[in-house]
Structure formats: structure tokens, C-alpha cells
Length: 157
Image (cartoon, rainbow, N blue to C red; front, side):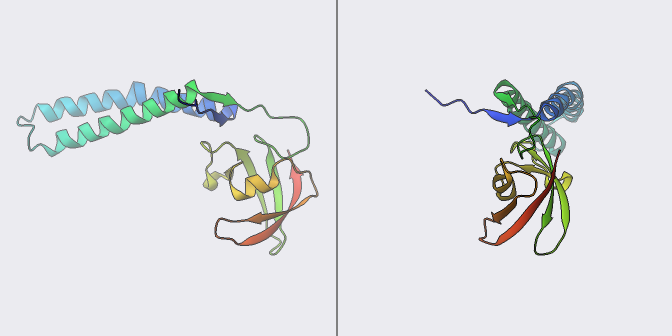
């Protein structure tokens, strides 16, 4: 029997996936149906680039729908704790000891991670090193390339 994979998400992450799923089903599927209909109307499908493109887009849409449905079916919603320790769902302000640079990160599950929005996974090197730590703690981070650096946890909210 296969092991069921659980996906750790914040409530916000679940909401975002539900919104994306509704958009894919209600908007993108319908747009794709129209594109397929128009491409079929062009006649011979054997050398119809528009038809091929629409079919490829259909496959991409359906694959993403299936992926999101699987995630939502196997989701474990992570509740934010009120404790002042670093955990999923917490926003953490850190200072890079070497440079003095201060950054703020929001800790999430791996599916929600988006470094451009400062959402980092608890499975990332920085996320792992800060997990269950307190304000004022100094943590050492080892990147996948072997580089070491230190962070000071300034604030947890």
C-alpha cells in the first residue's frame, strides 16, 4: 500500500490553492474549450499548430487541476502558535551577522514557498536552522553548497 503524502500548508496557502483551482476550472478550462473549438473549425487536425497548442494547454491545465486537488485532499493545515518560537506560519525578522543586513521571512510549507515574496520553506536551510528557536538566538545556516553564515533572530510575530 502506498504511503499517503501529507502537504503542510497555512490557511492562507489553502485559500490560495482553492482560488487557483476555481480559476482553472471556471475560466481557463472554458477558454481552452473555445480555443479547441476554433482550432477544430480550421479543418485538418494533422498539421494544425493551433489545435496542437490548445491540446498541450489543455493537458497543462488538467495536470495542474489534478495536482491541486491532490494537495487539497491530503493537506494538513498548520496552525500558527501563540508561542514566541520560530515555527511555520510565523514572520521572523533576522539579521545576517556578517553583513548586518536585516530581512523578514514568513515560514511556510514547501508548496507555499516563494522567495520573491520572502516566503521560505521550513525545509530550506534557513528555515530548518531557525525552527523552534527564540528571539535573540544566534543560528548557523549551512547552504546546500556548503557555505556557512550566521543569523540573529531579532523578532518573531
